[in-house]
Image 1: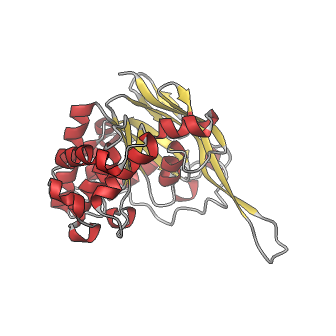
Image 2: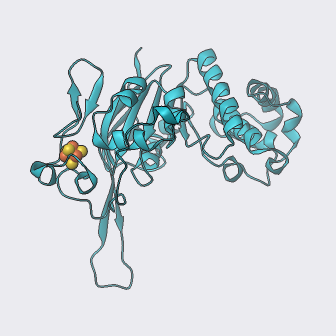
Length: 323
Ligand code: SF4
């Protein structure tokens, strides 16, 4: 598979200004040196606790916020260097599905108008001419054509997420970034929406960058995974192998904290203690060292580099990885 998306050494630092205070402004590094690829037709998951930088990563890839350092190459073109008109053309090929379909859909706008809007913005197609395509894409996500004249409050959460997926599909993108796209749905509805996303992927050869905190969803839906902690990728690799044999202590803690249906198969837990540190004041060395059961002296002094593990397709950033 050839690479569709290449993210190289991406970094994002926010500066927070203190108004009415003599204290200096402070900086928060939300992303640090993040590199990965997404191949055509591949699903790459991103997992980590709240505040680990997952959503900032999605917004940088989508160019909703400008990265401080690094490059985002899409189909060979560096998005960070494009002029705004070229960026807009490229943006049609990358779409996003958000966690809460109710707030991401305009409650005062009919479904038809919502779905037709990207066609007008990107291609200048007027509403009347866009309607056949709108009805077609509603059919693709299992919604009736009559939804065109209805409003978001007339649908259930699962139906609204189908509509949000239809809006993402209407420009025929190559990559969809799904930011906790099924987290707010009931488990049965979640499964239906994931099956729908999988079917659409198979039909269109789409790629997904799939952000989630749910390891069950990750295991069933993704091909590869990036594990993030405090703005860095700490481990990556094929999802089955990585969750079966985590090498980074943080990945192992995440894996062990996930519920297991069969209690006889429950693992000896390596549960995390303490909170994720503030990105405004990260620990020295390895940022995980205050919470890590395997930390040694070097861990508080030197940040580990994300390095290949032989020819396994896996990478880990740890001075003392698990065997
Ligand atoms: Fe733990 Fe040290 Fe590895 Fe960081 S580098 S995860 S502190 S063992």
